[in-house]
Amino acid sequence: MISFYNTLSGEVEEFKPRLAGQASLYTCGPTVYDYPHIGNYRAYIFEDLLKRFLLFSDFKVTHVMNITDVDDKTIRGANSLGMPLYEYTKKYTEAFFEDIKTLRILPADYYPRATEHIDDMVRMIKGLLDKGYAYIKDGSVYFSLAKFPDYGKLSKINKDELKAGARVETDEYEKESVYDFVLWKKAKPGEPVWETEFGPGRPGWHIECSAMSTRYLGPNFDIHCGGIDNIFPHHENEIAQSEAFYGQKFVNYWLHCHHLVVDGEKMSKSKGNFYTLRDLLARNIDPVDLRFFLLSTHYRKMLNFTFDNLEQAKASRQRIIDFLYELEHQSLAEASQPESEPLAAAALTNFKESLADDLNISAALAALFELIRGTNSRLAKSQLSRQAANQVLAAIYQMDQVLAVLPEKKEEELTAEIMKKIEQREQARLEKNFALADSIRQELLQQGIMLEDTKEGVRWKKIK
Ligand code: AMP
Ligand code: ZN
Image (tube, rainbow, N blue to C red; front, side, top):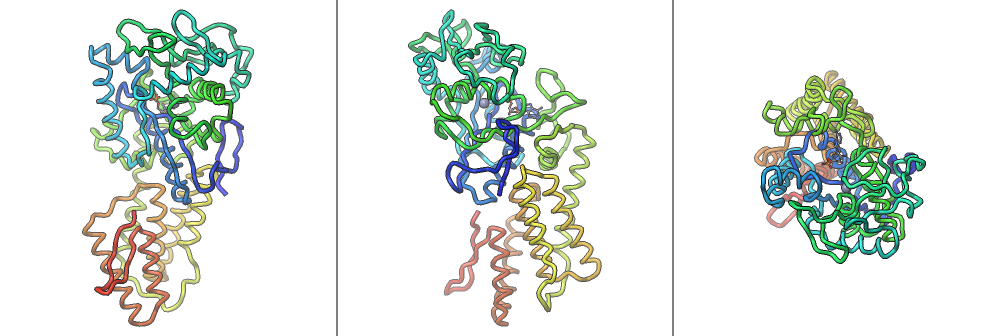
């Protein structure tokens, strides 16, 4: 059973997907007005952990991440440089794609751009006007909170603070401003303009995510993520717009990660207390150490950024790498009898069960380090066979399908290792040790290598 803490219910709930074995996932993407800071990457890496875990648990995941390429911040940025909006956002969109590759974040299936989905937003706003959830005031369109009694169910805001008829124009605002929010902003000099039947203008930020998520995933989907700062007003507004328009529940599970902070304050552009990935690369920080650092604290806990904490994460990751090297290069005896204590299998089960419990990464990593300790102690007592060592290696490489923090094997190393395994398997078959032959095949399979017995001999291919 997999369970997640759902912000909507405020409880850890069993994950029941809409369709068995499938998960539809929407994650709020970058606003491409600048280089993302590593706080943003905490959110994207938490989402990557979630997605990789679902894939690891044999789910088919459809993942959509939007690119916000028109909003208050992007327009302000482009205007300050006198650049066309498209050219300005293109640079930061490309930087984002480069960064996520560097951080080993799996790509989404779709990256819809807001500017390419204006029609979907206009259709929704028109529908909200027709249904009476929205109204026009001075050329802009607003969502009327009074018409949507469920408003506040995600962020649990105090409805008494609702200011009837008061309106907010900006995309971002605090809880003190629980006002009717803007869906469509009337045309202003120096801003991009789209012509619509309710007047010329451009979309507000919140309607962008409602339109793009439902365009790709349908009116109701499984999981929506973001950082906790997205809960109010962004996600609260997404719920209001989508549920009012479609007349059904929008998202089943809302998952939010806590912030990356510096001296107790949220890392953010506006506070100036941020590092971009590029800043850290310039200091020779290995991006995979950063990934490990951001990943290894539970997503619902606040995470404090310091270079010391980053160093500690680097040292822990290095322990795993050193251990693997040792184990791969030790000369160990073949086992004369079956392993009495299947360390690797137990650790893998523990790892999976921990992550299934609301992505309990601390317990999952504890299972990994426990496996390292247990294996080392058997190594020290010369109680480890080559087969048992291989099982440990296979288990750790499997865990790394979720963590993605181990060095990638070079093609030559991989080939040499596979050829050695093939020889061992052939030898086992000659000796009629079919159990061993089969376990070698399985072990390679777990590493994504499939063996095929052909007339010309054994062939191998990568299946990932
Ligand atoms: P933005 O580009 O500001 O819309 O943010 C993109 C994502 O990063 C959103 O999911 C935010 O909630 C998240 N985010 C922003 N700052 C932080 C932070 N300091 N720690 C964790 N997540 C953050
Ligand atoms: Zn969003």
